[in-house]
Length: 105
Image (cartoon, rainbow, N blue to C red; front, side, top):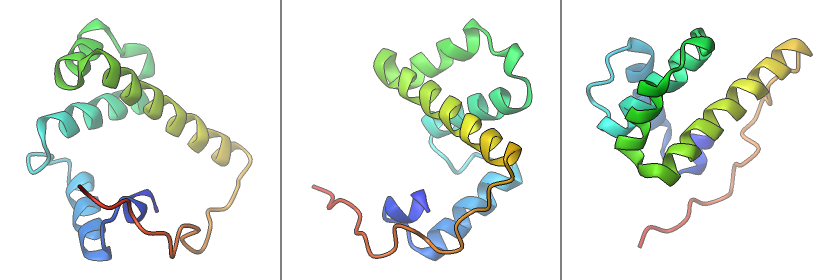
């Protein structure tokens, strides 16, 4: 849903999901690759996150945006675990349907 809210159409979302799931992230920007690698490591082995992982995010995003990536990765992992623990169902429809993406300047 967030990709649709960001303005991607169904074809773009499908292609992006396919590329993400393949594990070959070479079609993504270096920033995206760094964020994906961080989120994957946090999901699979959170205790293994180290200074080098954070330094790579800082190199790619800068000091302030690095914290955005870390915060959103933590929030999304937390929300997924809460939903799984309570067996909360996902929405059947896109609750953001009809909202338009911000116009690009």
